[in-house]
Image 1: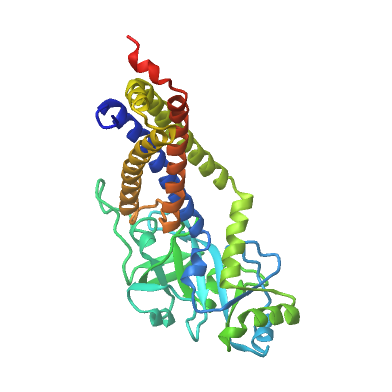
Image 2 (image 1 turned 120 degrees about the vertical axis):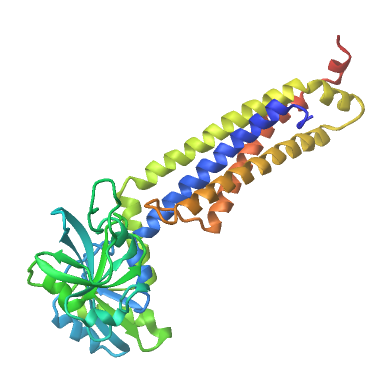
Length: 379
């Protein structure tokens, strides 16, 4: 019955397909966008604890500390090492005279702890060269690229040896790295802590964070509590800081509402299309259900038939929708589109599609249950 009604069969699949596609794609973009809010924490994997001003709300909301607090933290028992870390926005002046805001990250001069997670060209140690900086590859190819040499030609990507002007200071590119894109998709530039504080606008305090490594991996949380008690500063593990950053964006931005509306609309549209078409399909085939009922088929058997039909179109539509969403993931790898596709999203979208199929089936089952077998013998 189901496959024989080609038009309605394809119509139900299309409804489920669009529901699965919209739900999976929008949730993937939302997850990818939220993961960028703590991308710096993911890239900076060496420290166990981040020490900061208690008023910090998210990772880019750095509130400067006193330099003396670094030595205070390093003197606490259980601290294997503590290093300074700077993060701030500095304007870069490009060759064509335009300005581009950049996230400048300053890492410890001696140990270079906190550097980019993956070097593509150059070495991390080259930051010790005069005026050296490392630029993320996306910025080097796009936002910080040199203007085209002639109209109609593409921009020339930054390469090792090129120079930038950061807050009226000369900076020499000594490396290209791959980093997690920021929430605002701004260029990321790494340099040493001392050079970053020279590039930064003059302030009385410039120390953004203190990165701490615990001497005992099993004592990370007790050490964080001890640092907070001794110094009056906030000391969070990387996982706690990620959660704090994520919670800030979820509570203080309209992003969850916007994506939530899109997901709900996808669910409603899918339910409306699939439900209406499936109900119409069942109504057109009532004579066959009546025949089966007249031959002794129970209501439970007919209900299982309807459920099987609904699950079949749900399985096909879900597979097509998730497949197209996966293709979006492939084409977004080298674009500005935030797209993260963890396995949990497959479970969520599968649950939503199953619910759509159940709703569609229930609407049809009620009509089958109340069907009188005598309808078969009417003219």
